[in-house]
Length: 387
Length: 64
Ligand SMILES: Cc1cc2nc3c(=O)[nH]c(=O)nc-3n(C[C@H](O)[C@H](O)[C@H](O)COP(=O)(O)OP(=O)(O)OC[C@H]3O[C@@H](n4cnc5c(N)ncnc54)[C@H](O)[C@@H]3O)c2cc1C
Ligand code: SF4
Image 1 (cartoon, rainbow over the protein chains, first blue to last red):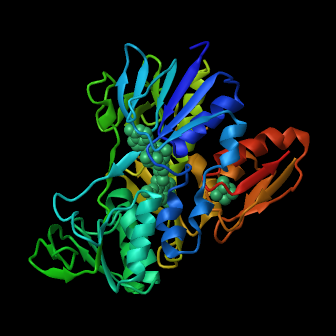
Image 2: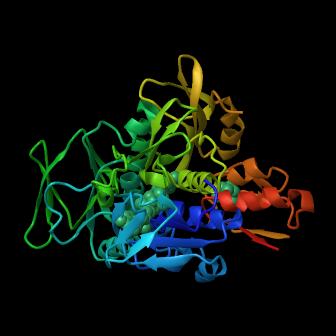
Image 3: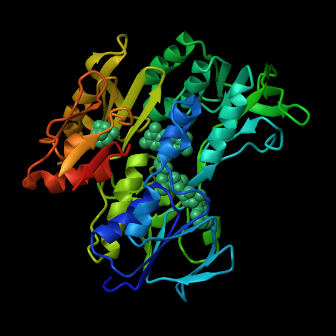
Protein backbone atom coordinates (compact mmCIF):
# COMPACT_ATOMS: atom_id res chain seq x y z
CA UNK A 1 0.00 0.00 0.00
CA UNK A 2 3.05 2.20 -0.04
CA UNK A 3 3.47 5.39 1.94
CA UNK A 4 1.31 5.77 4.97
CA UNK A 5 0.95 9.09 6.68
CA UNK A 6 -1.21 7.86 9.45
CA UNK A 7 -2.44 4.47 10.63
CA UNK A 8 -5.34 4.40 13.04
CA UNK A 9 -5.91 1.24 15.06
CA UNK A 10 -9.32 0.98 16.73
CA UNK A 11 -9.41 -1.37 19.73
CA UNK A 12 -6.57 -1.20 22.26
CA UNK A 13 -6.12 -4.76 23.38
CA UNK A 14 -4.13 -7.82 22.31
CA UNK A 15 -4.69 -7.47 18.56
CA UNK A 16 -4.53 -3.68 18.42
CA UNK A 17 -1.40 -3.36 20.54
CA UNK A 18 0.41 -6.05 18.55
CA UNK A 19 -0.51 -4.37 15.28
CA UNK A 20 0.75 -1.00 16.47
CA UNK A 21 3.95 -2.41 17.90
CA UNK A 22 4.70 -4.49 14.81
CA UNK A 23 4.14 -1.46 12.58
CA UNK A 24 6.82 0.41 14.50
CA UNK A 25 9.24 -2.49 14.72
CA UNK A 26 8.99 -3.11 11.01
CA UNK A 27 9.47 0.37 9.73
CA UNK A 28 6.35 2.54 9.98
CA UNK A 29 7.68 5.95 11.00
CA UNK A 30 4.71 8.26 10.43
CA UNK A 31 1.57 8.78 12.53
CA UNK A 32 0.16 5.96 14.62
CA UNK A 33 -2.94 6.33 16.77
CA UNK A 34 -4.38 3.61 19.00
CA UNK A 35 -8.00 4.26 19.93
CA UNK A 36 -9.58 2.40 22.87
CA UNK A 37 -12.93 2.28 24.58
CA UNK A 38 -11.51 1.33 27.98
CA UNK A 39 -9.81 3.98 30.12
CA UNK A 40 -6.98 1.84 31.47
CA UNK A 41 -3.74 0.88 29.73
CA UNK A 42 -4.20 -2.16 27.48
CA UNK A 43 -4.17 -5.43 29.43
CA UNK A 44 -4.39 -9.14 28.80
CA UNK A 45 -7.70 -10.96 29.20
CA UNK A 46 -6.93 -14.67 29.79
CA UNK A 47 -5.75 -14.08 33.38
CA UNK A 48 -9.10 -12.42 34.20
CA UNK A 49 -10.94 -15.73 34.58
CA UNK A 50 -7.89 -17.38 36.16
CA UNK A 51 -5.31 -15.50 38.28
CA UNK A 52 -7.28 -12.25 38.67
CA UNK A 53 -10.51 -13.98 39.63
CA UNK A 54 -8.61 -16.21 42.03
CA UNK A 55 -6.83 -13.19 43.50
CA UNK A 56 -3.32 -14.52 42.88
CA UNK A 57 -2.38 -11.68 40.52
CA UNK A 58 -2.71 -7.96 41.07
CA UNK A 59 -4.52 -6.28 38.16
CA UNK A 60 -1.32 -4.39 37.15
CA UNK A 61 0.37 -7.65 36.30
CA UNK A 62 -1.93 -8.10 33.29
CA UNK A 63 -0.68 -4.96 31.50
CA UNK A 64 0.27 -5.86 27.93
CA UNK A 65 3.08 -3.28 27.87
CA UNK A 66 4.42 -0.75 30.35
CA UNK A 67 3.24 2.83 29.76
CA UNK A 68 6.73 3.72 28.52
CA UNK A 69 6.45 1.32 25.58
CA UNK A 70 3.81 3.51 23.95
CA UNK A 71 5.81 6.70 24.31
CA UNK A 72 9.03 4.98 23.25
CA UNK A 73 7.34 3.71 20.11
CA UNK A 74 5.53 6.94 19.42
CA UNK A 75 2.13 5.31 19.66
CA UNK A 76 -0.48 7.97 20.35
CA UNK A 77 -3.04 6.53 22.77
CA UNK A 78 -6.65 7.71 22.76
CA UNK A 79 -8.12 5.77 25.65
CA UNK A 80 -11.65 6.10 26.98
CA UNK A 81 -12.92 7.43 23.66
CA UNK A 82 -14.62 4.72 21.60
CA UNK A 83 -14.96 5.04 17.87
CA UNK A 84 -18.59 5.67 17.04
CA UNK A 85 -18.49 5.88 13.28
CA UNK A 86 -16.46 5.48 10.13
CA UNK A 87 -16.50 7.46 6.90
CA UNK A 88 -14.84 5.32 4.25
CA UNK A 89 -15.10 7.91 1.49
CA UNK A 90 -13.31 10.60 3.49
CA UNK A 91 -11.17 8.05 5.34
CA UNK A 92 -12.05 9.30 8.79
CA UNK A 93 -12.83 7.59 12.07
CA UNK A 94 -15.27 9.41 14.32
CA UNK A 95 -14.76 9.23 18.09
CA UNK A 96 -17.34 9.60 20.87
CA UNK A 97 -15.83 13.01 21.62
CA UNK A 98 -16.83 14.14 18.14
CA UNK A 99 -13.22 14.26 17.01
CA UNK A 100 -12.50 12.89 13.55
CA UNK A 101 -9.17 11.22 12.80
CA UNK A 102 -8.06 10.76 9.21
CA UNK A 103 -6.20 7.64 8.16
CA UNK A 104 -4.33 6.10 5.26
CA UNK A 105 -4.62 2.71 6.88
CA UNK A 106 -7.26 1.60 9.36
CA UNK A 107 -7.18 -1.49 11.57
CA UNK A 108 -10.36 -2.74 13.17
CA UNK A 109 -9.48 -4.61 16.37
CA UNK A 110 -12.55 -4.02 18.53
CA UNK A 111 -12.89 -7.62 19.72
CA UNK A 112 -16.14 -8.92 21.09
CA UNK A 113 -18.63 -8.06 23.82
CA UNK A 114 -20.46 -10.59 25.99
CA UNK A 115 -23.78 -11.92 24.81
CA UNK A 116 -26.46 -11.33 27.44
CA UNK A 117 -29.70 -13.02 28.50
CA UNK A 118 -32.87 -11.27 27.37
CA UNK A 119 -33.74 -10.73 31.05
CA UNK A 120 -32.26 -10.22 34.49
CA UNK A 121 -29.14 -8.15 33.84
CA UNK A 122 -30.59 -5.20 35.76
CA UNK A 123 -30.50 -7.23 39.00
CA UNK A 124 -27.57 -6.83 41.40
CA UNK A 125 -25.21 -9.78 41.50
CA UNK A 126 -25.65 -10.63 37.81
CA UNK A 127 -22.32 -10.50 36.00
CA UNK A 128 -20.64 -10.92 32.66
CA UNK A 129 -16.85 -11.32 32.30
CA UNK A 130 -14.87 -9.59 29.59
CA UNK A 131 -13.07 -6.61 31.12
CA UNK A 132 -10.86 -5.95 34.12
CA UNK A 133 -13.74 -4.04 35.73
CA UNK A 134 -15.96 -7.08 35.21
CA UNK A 135 -13.37 -9.39 36.78
CA UNK A 136 -12.84 -7.20 39.85
CA UNK A 137 -16.58 -6.72 40.36
CA UNK A 138 -17.18 -10.44 40.07
CA UNK A 139 -14.35 -11.28 42.45
CA UNK A 140 -15.65 -8.75 44.97
CA UNK A 141 -19.09 -10.34 44.87
CA UNK A 142 -17.71 -13.88 45.06
CA UNK A 143 -15.79 -12.97 48.22
CA UNK A 144 -19.02 -11.82 49.86
CA UNK A 145 -21.22 -14.71 48.79
CA UNK A 146 -21.75 -18.39 49.30
CA UNK A 147 -23.37 -19.54 46.07
CA UNK A 148 -22.94 -18.80 42.40
CA UNK A 149 -24.73 -20.10 39.33
CA UNK A 150 -22.68 -19.97 36.13
CA UNK A 151 -24.83 -19.89 33.01
CA UNK A 152 -22.96 -21.32 30.05
CA UNK A 153 -20.38 -24.13 30.14
CA UNK A 154 -17.99 -22.95 27.44
CA UNK A 155 -14.37 -21.97 28.17
CA UNK A 156 -15.18 -18.90 30.16
CA UNK A 157 -18.02 -20.42 32.20
CA UNK A 158 -16.18 -23.60 33.05
CA UNK A 159 -12.98 -21.73 34.00
CA UNK A 160 -14.89 -19.29 36.19
CA UNK A 161 -16.80 -22.17 37.80
CA UNK A 162 -13.48 -23.80 38.69
CA UNK A 163 -12.07 -20.55 40.10
CA UNK A 164 -15.20 -19.93 42.20
CA UNK A 165 -15.18 -23.49 43.50
CA UNK A 166 -11.57 -23.06 44.56
CA UNK A 167 -12.66 -19.98 46.48
CA UNK A 168 -14.98 -22.27 48.43
CA UNK A 169 -18.31 -21.26 46.96
CA UNK A 170 -21.20 -23.51 46.20
CA UNK A 171 -21.07 -23.60 42.38
CA UNK A 172 -23.62 -24.77 39.83
CA UNK A 173 -22.83 -24.80 36.12
CA UNK A 174 -25.86 -24.71 33.80
CA UNK A 175 -25.96 -25.30 30.05
CA UNK A 176 -28.57 -26.46 27.55
CA UNK A 177 -26.00 -28.75 25.92
CA UNK A 178 -25.44 -32.21 27.45
CA UNK A 179 -21.81 -31.65 28.56
CA UNK A 180 -19.43 -28.75 29.24
CA UNK A 181 -17.33 -27.77 26.21
CA UNK A 182 -18.97 -30.49 24.12
CA UNK A 183 -19.33 -28.24 21.10
CA UNK A 184 -15.62 -27.44 21.26
CA UNK A 185 -14.18 -30.94 21.84
CA UNK A 186 -16.79 -33.64 21.39
CA UNK A 187 -18.22 -36.19 23.83
CA UNK A 188 -15.19 -37.94 25.23
CA UNK A 189 -13.11 -34.95 26.27
CA UNK A 190 -16.26 -33.16 27.43
CA UNK A 191 -17.15 -36.16 29.61
CA UNK A 192 -13.70 -36.01 31.19
CA UNK A 193 -14.17 -32.29 31.88
CA UNK A 194 -17.59 -32.96 33.42
CA UNK A 195 -16.10 -35.65 35.68
CA UNK A 196 -13.31 -33.34 36.78
CA UNK A 197 -15.77 -30.61 37.74
CA UNK A 198 -18.08 -33.01 39.60
CA UNK A 199 -15.17 -34.52 41.50
CA UNK A 200 -14.19 -31.03 42.61
CA UNK A 201 -17.71 -30.38 43.84
CA UNK A 202 -19.16 -28.30 41.00
CA UNK A 203 -22.81 -29.21 40.48
CA UNK A 204 -23.63 -29.68 36.81
CA UNK A 205 -27.08 -29.02 35.40
CA UNK A 206 -26.52 -29.93 31.79
CA UNK A 207 -29.26 -30.16 29.19
CA UNK A 208 -31.17 -27.33 30.87
CA UNK A 209 -31.63 -23.76 29.82
CA UNK A 210 -32.42 -20.72 31.94
CA UNK A 211 -35.88 -19.15 31.61
CA UNK A 212 -35.78 -16.42 34.27
CA UNK A 213 -33.70 -14.80 36.99
CA UNK A 214 -35.53 -14.20 40.26
CA UNK A 215 -34.97 -11.50 42.84
CA UNK A 216 -35.87 -7.97 43.78
CA UNK A 217 -33.05 -5.51 43.40
CA UNK A 218 -30.53 -8.32 43.66
CA UNK A 219 -30.66 -11.78 42.16
CA UNK A 220 -31.73 -14.64 44.42
CA UNK A 221 -32.46 -17.53 42.10
CA UNK A 222 -32.21 -18.97 38.62
CA UNK A 223 -35.23 -20.66 37.08
CA UNK A 224 -34.46 -23.51 34.70
CA UNK A 225 -36.41 -24.94 31.77
CA UNK A 226 -37.45 -27.95 33.89
CA UNK A 227 -39.20 -25.58 36.33
CA UNK A 228 -36.70 -25.94 39.16
CA UNK A 229 -35.17 -22.84 40.77
CA UNK A 230 -31.52 -22.75 41.87
CA UNK A 231 -30.63 -20.53 44.79
CA UNK A 232 -27.98 -17.99 43.79
CA UNK A 233 -26.28 -15.05 45.49
CA UNK A 234 -24.49 -14.37 42.22
CA UNK A 235 -25.04 -15.28 38.60
CA UNK A 236 -22.32 -15.21 35.96
CA UNK A 237 -23.70 -15.18 32.44
CA UNK A 238 -21.10 -16.70 30.10
CA UNK A 239 -23.07 -17.52 26.98
CA UNK A 240 -20.63 -16.37 24.34
CA UNK A 241 -19.61 -13.13 22.75
CA UNK A 242 -20.59 -11.08 19.73
CA UNK A 243 -18.23 -9.05 17.53
CA UNK A 244 -18.10 -5.36 18.53
CA UNK A 245 -19.12 -3.94 15.15
CA UNK A 246 -22.01 -1.60 16.06
CA UNK A 247 -19.84 1.39 15.30
CA UNK A 248 -19.42 0.17 11.71
CA UNK A 249 -23.15 0.04 10.96
CA UNK A 250 -23.91 1.70 7.63
CA UNK A 251 -20.24 2.45 6.95
CA UNK A 252 -19.92 0.06 4.01
CA UNK A 253 -17.47 -2.25 5.79
CA UNK A 254 -18.85 -5.78 5.27
CA UNK A 255 -20.07 -7.19 8.58
CA UNK A 256 -21.48 -10.67 9.04
CA UNK A 257 -20.63 -12.24 12.41
CA UNK A 258 -17.48 -10.10 12.41
CA UNK A 259 -15.70 -7.96 9.85
CA UNK A 260 -15.53 -10.06 6.70
CA UNK A 261 -12.02 -10.06 5.20
CA UNK A 262 -10.08 -11.75 2.44
CA UNK A 263 -7.10 -14.03 3.04
CA UNK A 264 -4.84 -11.04 3.70
CA UNK A 265 -7.24 -9.77 6.40
CA UNK A 266 -8.35 -6.85 4.24
CA UNK A 267 -12.00 -5.82 4.50
CA UNK A 268 -12.07 -3.00 1.92
CA UNK A 269 -9.32 -0.79 0.52
CA UNK A 270 -7.20 0.71 3.32
CA UNK A 271 -9.14 -1.21 6.00
CA UNK A 272 -8.01 -4.38 7.77
CA UNK A 273 -9.26 -6.37 10.76
CA UNK A 274 -7.47 -8.47 13.39
CA UNK A 275 -8.32 -10.49 16.47
CA UNK A 276 -11.68 -11.68 17.80
CA UNK A 277 -13.60 -9.28 15.54
CA UNK A 278 -12.09 -10.49 12.25
CA UNK A 279 -13.78 -13.11 10.09
CA UNK A 280 -11.30 -13.83 7.37
CA UNK A 281 -10.75 -16.46 4.71
CA UNK A 282 -8.23 -18.93 6.11
CA UNK A 283 -6.79 -20.71 3.06
CA UNK A 284 -5.40 -23.52 5.21
CA UNK A 285 -8.87 -24.62 6.22
CA UNK A 286 -10.62 -23.33 3.12
CA UNK A 287 -13.30 -21.20 4.71
CA UNK A 288 -14.21 -18.04 6.58
CA UNK A 289 -13.02 -18.28 10.15
CA UNK A 290 -13.34 -16.14 13.25
CA UNK A 291 -11.09 -17.17 16.11
CA UNK A 292 -11.71 -15.98 19.67
CA UNK A 293 -8.35 -17.01 21.07
CA UNK A 294 -5.46 -15.07 22.43
CA UNK A 295 -2.74 -16.43 20.15
CA UNK A 296 -4.68 -15.48 17.05
CA UNK A 297 -4.91 -11.87 18.18
CA UNK A 298 -1.09 -11.65 18.22
CA UNK A 299 -0.51 -13.50 14.96
CA UNK A 300 -3.22 -11.68 13.07
CA UNK A 301 -2.10 -8.32 14.44
CA UNK A 302 1.39 -9.02 13.07
CA UNK A 303 -0.02 -10.10 9.71
CA UNK A 304 -2.14 -6.98 9.37
CA UNK A 305 0.80 -4.72 10.24
CA UNK A 306 2.85 -6.36 7.48
CA UNK A 307 0.02 -5.99 5.00
CA UNK A 308 -0.19 -2.28 5.82
CA UNK A 309 3.54 -1.97 5.32
CA UNK A 310 3.14 -3.24 1.79
CA UNK A 311 3.87 -6.95 2.21
CA UNK A 312 0.49 -8.64 2.33
CA UNK A 313 0.58 -12.41 2.61
CA UNK A 314 -2.15 -14.96 3.07
CA UNK A 315 -2.88 -15.35 6.77
CA UNK A 316 -3.14 -19.12 7.17
CA UNK A 317 -2.52 -19.96 10.81
CA UNK A 318 -3.34 -23.11 12.69
CA UNK A 319 -5.51 -21.90 15.56
CA UNK A 320 -4.13 -22.53 19.04
CA UNK A 321 -5.61 -22.07 22.46
CA UNK A 322 -5.40 -23.28 26.03
CA UNK A 323 -7.64 -23.41 29.05
CA UNK A 324 -6.84 -24.03 32.73
CA UNK A 325 -9.45 -25.64 34.96
CA UNK A 326 -8.51 -27.00 38.38
CA UNK A 327 -5.30 -28.94 37.67
CA UNK A 328 -6.10 -29.55 34.03
CA UNK A 329 -4.12 -27.69 31.42
CA UNK A 330 -5.83 -28.35 28.14
CA UNK A 331 -4.25 -27.11 24.91
CA UNK A 332 -5.32 -27.54 21.35
CA UNK A 333 -3.98 -26.81 17.88
CA UNK A 334 -6.15 -26.89 14.76
CA UNK A 335 -9.89 -27.23 14.35
CA UNK A 336 -12.40 -29.54 16.03
CA UNK A 337 -15.47 -29.93 13.85
CA UNK A 338 -18.41 -31.89 15.23
CA UNK A 339 -18.00 -34.65 12.64
CA UNK A 340 -14.36 -35.31 13.52
CA UNK A 341 -13.41 -38.69 14.91
CA UNK A 342 -11.37 -38.49 18.12
CA UNK A 343 -8.56 -40.96 18.76
CA UNK A 344 -6.40 -41.05 21.87
CA UNK A 345 -2.84 -41.27 20.55
CA UNK A 346 -0.77 -41.02 23.75
CA UNK A 347 -1.58 -41.53 27.42
CA UNK A 348 -5.13 -42.12 28.57
CA UNK A 349 -8.27 -40.22 29.47
CA UNK A 350 -8.47 -42.15 32.74
CA UNK A 351 -5.05 -40.82 33.81
CA UNK A 352 -5.99 -37.31 32.68
CA UNK A 353 -2.79 -37.15 30.74
CA UNK A 354 -3.23 -37.66 27.03
CA UNK A 355 -2.94 -36.37 23.50
CA UNK A 356 -5.91 -36.90 21.21
CA UNK A 357 -6.04 -36.54 17.44
CA UNK A 358 -9.17 -35.35 15.66
CA UNK A 359 -9.65 -36.79 12.19
CA UNK A 360 -11.90 -35.93 9.28
CA UNK A 361 -11.82 -38.40 6.37
CA UNK A 362 -8.74 -39.97 7.90
CA UNK A 363 -6.80 -36.69 8.00
CA UNK A 364 -5.74 -35.06 11.26
CA UNK A 365 -7.34 -31.60 11.57
CA UNK A 366 -6.75 -30.98 15.27
CA UNK A 367 -4.63 -32.22 18.16
CA UNK A 368 -5.56 -31.76 21.80
CA UNK A 369 -3.41 -32.31 24.85
CA UNK A 370 -4.45 -32.63 28.48
CA UNK A 371 -1.48 -32.15 30.83
CA UNK A 372 0.83 -33.38 28.07
CA UNK A 373 2.27 -30.25 26.53
CA UNK A 374 5.48 -31.58 25.11
CA UNK A 375 4.00 -34.53 23.30
CA UNK A 376 1.30 -32.25 21.97
CA UNK A 377 3.84 -29.97 20.38
CA UNK A 378 5.47 -32.96 18.71
CA UNK A 379 2.14 -34.02 17.25
CA UNK A 380 1.26 -30.60 15.93
CA UNK A 381 2.93 -31.25 12.57
CA UNK A 382 0.46 -34.09 11.90
CA UNK A 383 -2.26 -31.54 11.18
CA UNK A 384 -2.91 -31.67 7.49
CA UNK A 385 -1.47 -28.83 5.49
CA UNK A 386 1.04 -27.87 8.15
CA UNK A 387 4.62 -27.44 7.05
CA UNK B 1 21.17 -10.13 24.42
CA UNK B 2 19.84 -11.43 27.74
CA UNK B 3 16.71 -13.53 28.07
CA UNK B 4 14.58 -14.11 31.15
CA UNK B 5 11.46 -16.22 31.46
CA UNK B 6 8.66 -15.88 33.99
CA UNK B 7 7.61 -19.47 34.63
CA UNK B 8 4.82 -18.21 36.83
CA UNK B 9 3.18 -16.43 33.93
CA UNK B 10 3.92 -19.10 31.30
CA UNK B 11 0.86 -20.96 30.09
CA UNK B 12 2.81 -23.71 28.39
CA UNK B 13 1.80 -22.64 24.93
CA UNK B 14 5.05 -23.77 23.38
CA UNK B 15 5.10 -20.95 20.85
CA UNK B 16 8.59 -20.13 22.05
CA UNK B 17 9.77 -23.67 21.35
CA UNK B 18 8.33 -23.52 17.85
CA UNK B 19 9.95 -20.14 17.22
CA UNK B 20 13.36 -20.74 18.80
CA UNK B 21 13.96 -24.42 19.63
CA UNK B 22 17.62 -23.77 20.45
CA UNK B 23 16.75 -21.25 23.13
CA UNK B 24 13.57 -22.61 24.71
CA UNK B 25 12.28 -25.99 25.77
CA UNK B 26 9.28 -27.10 27.82
CA UNK B 27 8.98 -29.19 30.96
CA UNK B 28 7.49 -32.55 30.24
CA UNK B 29 4.82 -32.58 32.94
CA UNK B 30 3.15 -29.23 32.57
CA UNK B 31 4.68 -27.64 29.50
CA UNK B 32 6.27 -24.77 31.45
CA UNK B 33 9.03 -23.00 29.61
CA UNK B 34 12.65 -23.99 30.21
CA UNK B 35 15.33 -21.52 29.18
CA UNK B 36 18.22 -23.32 27.49
CA UNK B 37 20.53 -20.35 27.00
CA UNK B 38 20.42 -17.07 28.88
CA UNK B 39 22.51 -15.14 26.38
CA UNK B 40 21.72 -16.45 22.93
CA UNK B 41 24.39 -15.93 20.26
CA UNK B 42 23.83 -13.38 17.50
CA UNK B 43 22.41 -15.90 15.03
CA UNK B 44 19.62 -16.79 17.46
CA UNK B 45 18.69 -13.25 18.43
CA UNK B 46 16.02 -12.73 15.79
CA UNK B 47 14.32 -16.03 16.60
CA UNK B 48 14.46 -15.24 20.31
CA UNK B 49 12.86 -11.84 19.82
CA UNK B 50 10.19 -13.39 17.66
CA UNK B 51 9.45 -15.91 20.42
CA UNK B 52 9.08 -13.11 22.95
CA UNK B 53 6.64 -11.29 20.68
CA UNK B 54 4.59 -14.42 20.03
CA UNK B 55 4.38 -15.65 23.62
CA UNK B 56 0.73 -15.19 24.53
CA UNK B 57 1.54 -14.90 28.23
CA UNK B 58 4.25 -12.22 27.86
CA UNK B 59 6.45 -14.58 29.82
CA UNK B 60 9.65 -13.92 27.86
CA UNK B 61 11.67 -10.79 28.51
CA UNK B 62 14.48 -9.87 26.16
CA UNK B 63 17.07 -7.23 27.06
CA UNK B 64 19.54 -5.92 24.55
C1 LIG C 1 -12.01 -13.84 30.75
C2 LIG C 1 -11.38 -14.31 29.48
C3 LIG C 1 -10.51 -15.41 29.49
C4 LIG C 1 -9.89 -15.84 28.32
N1 LIG C 1 -9.05 -16.92 28.38
C5 LIG C 1 -8.44 -17.36 27.25
C6 LIG C 1 -7.56 -18.49 27.28
O1 LIG C 1 -7.34 -19.11 28.32
N2 LIG C 1 -6.97 -18.87 26.13
C7 LIG C 1 -7.19 -18.22 24.95
O2 LIG C 1 -6.64 -18.63 23.93
N3 LIG C 1 -8.02 -17.14 24.88
C8 LIG C 1 -8.66 -16.71 26.00
N4 LIG C 1 -9.51 -15.62 25.95
C9 LIG C 1 -9.72 -14.94 24.65
C10 LIG C 1 -8.71 -13.82 24.40
O3 LIG C 1 -8.60 -13.02 25.53
C11 LIG C 1 -9.16 -13.02 23.20
O4 LIG C 1 -9.05 -13.84 22.07
C12 LIG C 1 -8.34 -11.76 22.99
O5 LIG C 1 -8.51 -10.87 24.06
C13 LIG C 1 -8.73 -11.07 21.70
O6 LIG C 1 -8.07 -9.87 21.56
P1 LIG C 1 -8.63 -8.68 20.68
O7 LIG C 1 -7.65 -7.60 20.81
O8 LIG C 1 -9.02 -9.19 19.35
O9 LIG C 1 -10.05 -8.27 21.33
P2 LIG C 1 -10.39 -7.75 22.80
O10 LIG C 1 -9.46 -8.30 23.78
O11 LIG C 1 -11.85 -8.00 22.96
O12 LIG C 1 -10.15 -6.19 22.72
C14 LIG C 1 -10.92 -5.31 21.99
C15 LIG C 1 -10.78 -3.94 22.58
O13 LIG C 1 -11.46 -3.02 21.75
C16 LIG C 1 -12.19 -2.12 22.54
N5 LIG C 1 -13.32 -1.59 21.75
C17 LIG C 1 -14.50 -2.19 21.46
N6 LIG C 1 -15.27 -1.37 20.71
C18 LIG C 1 -14.56 -0.23 20.53
C19 LIG C 1 -14.81 0.99 19.82
N7 LIG C 1 -15.94 1.21 19.16
N8 LIG C 1 -13.85 1.93 19.86
C20 LIG C 1 -12.68 1.74 20.52
N9 LIG C 1 -12.39 0.60 21.18
C21 LIG C 1 -13.32 -0.37 21.18
C22 LIG C 1 -12.62 -2.93 23.73
O14 LIG C 1 -12.93 -2.09 24.81
C23 LIG C 1 -11.38 -3.79 23.97
O15 LIG C 1 -10.48 -3.15 24.82
C24 LIG C 1 -10.15 -15.17 27.10
C25 LIG C 1 -11.04 -14.08 27.08
C26 LIG C 1 -11.65 -13.66 28.25
C27 LIG C 1 -12.61 -12.49 28.22
S1 SF4 D 1 5.40 -19.20 24.49
FE1 SF4 D 1 5.25 -18.18 26.46
S2 SF4 D 1 3.56 -19.21 27.45
FE2 SF4 D 1 4.19 -20.49 25.77
S3 SF4 D 1 5.62 -21.97 26.65
FE3 SF4 D 1 6.79 -20.28 25.83
S4 SF4 D 1 7.01 -18.91 27.58
FE4 SF4 D 1 5.39 -20.28 28.10
